[in-house]
Image (cartoon, rainbow, N blue to C red; front, top):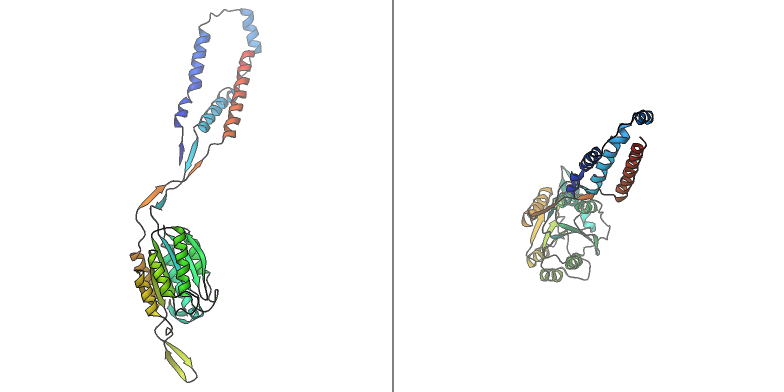
Length: 327
């Protein structure tokens, strides 16, 4: 919608009428002398006035000039911003074991990463108002997306992850250490790390428990998620065999990491489990309900336009006065 910063300027729109009224009254105050010959001469010189130039155009230019001086501003739709936001980093395991196809998704069996991406993207979209970051880890930990309010970008980055992108082993401790560094740099007191893995720490020089203790000192809460089915049927040379595809999952370490940081450990064996886990985290880390609201504004004042209208108005009035003097 439009608003004017100096709306009172529009009160001057009737000013030309007042000026014309007082000038006309001043002219009528002079004594008029009737001269017959002058009357005939005046009739010969009189020309038909163009109402567009004499009336409409000056009024239009005068009104446009006042509208520009009043400084019109266009206000957009209201935008809501939370008064307080939290920093949240997602740390995803991209080791080779994440390609194990033991997770049901919409009636079909998919690899672990495919299931994780389908659930995490929905979780990310619900984090409006929070700053999100993304860490990928395997042989080493890498910051894929720094902390940002642009949750759509984080969701896109999650969707573009591929197994083997950063190696095949699992550097859990290194991923926690990288998250600590990013949290401390941004100096936000509300810090949450969600770490998802399907194995044990097999890479990196930083031990997971030592990293978790350091995270606790920096007021970082860690939610750990262990992913993988408890059992699956594997076809072999001697027939089908039931195996545990999550035998390498180090649940004790993940539980201790969460306990040290006042977080919580979750176990995701299927699509329903993982979906409920993120719903639980949403309840444990709710989005702040207090918002600030502002409306984006665009200043439509353009001083060259005001100058051009002023010059044109002066020219039109000058031509009009010149025409009246010749009559």
